[in-house]
Length: 346
Image 1 (cartoon, rainbow, N blue to C red):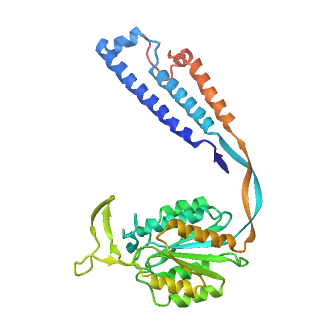
Image 2: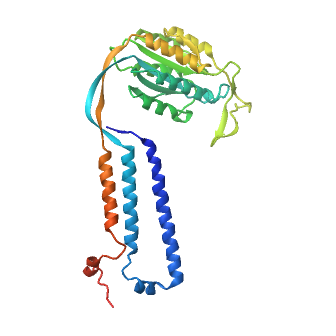
Image 3: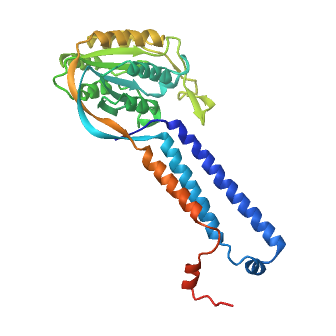
């Protein structure tokens, strides 16, 4: 396992790229001037010892040296021990609705992005809790198995969109079924499933599934995004609005949040319904809820005792600079004497 201490120094690689481009441009300029001065045969006789390959090779040595020195500034660190750490927490699973209706912009920037903001900020406050993510529309799919890696959870969350599911709709029952099987620790007493949706196009038997989940110790909280007035579903290409979704009659479809469905699921799931119009208020409430919950102790393995590795890259950088200093632009005599290609000498 490794860590990168100062990632911002990677930007210095742009200077190495600029150096290479400048070298190529200067080389082309020199060739043009040489051609204007004399023919290639005459140039060879005037400067028989000059090696074009050596010039490029010296530039390559400098570029490699600078690259290794930049990596040294970044300071990679290697984990030398795998340490078992005991942590306390609860299991939290988010079921995110990614159906087309979640693209409606009746809340800013749209329902889906609002839902992502809420989940991301909850994850930021989870502490040592484990987290998992489910996405659903016409079907439910596991996006991230339950894990302690909260940075990975946020990364996967940002990639969630309607194109990730093959069929449209809002199959809340499928999400609840998958959520029931998501919790992999039978000893965990506190399990929380947060379902974030606009509640539209729901199935009828969600109450039964929510009740079954409660019997397994899962508390279901629902978070509504959108509003009762609703809005059209925009169709965009490359970020540009090209129209709105229409029904078979050619009328623009207006999607409205159905909070009654979400409230019923929360009631049957021994949880609460939260209206997600105020992100801060919603996140603070859930954070307080999870802080008060009984924590279960579990073990996780992590790399520790990270040691600096910059010295190796400094050594390589200096080595390539020495190669560059010891190498001249002249042709190498002993290679010429080998006459590998049986060249005729004048």
